[in-house]
Image (tube, rainbow, N blue to C red):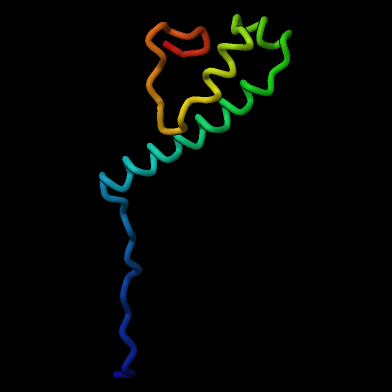
Length: 79
């Protein structure tokens, strides 16, 4: 024998808890990005989507981990 050991590469599979954490992190990063874009929209763009400047800034000021829709169903929340 030559002393070489042949092994198959080990595939790492994300555990369910790790996968949920990564999904949550992706949602938080998306919330940060979309809220930043909402805050940067001009008045014409906001009017097109039916959002006031005050609503846009209120949404942009939310904590990144606050992912639940606002109770009064904001117009930009998908149903």
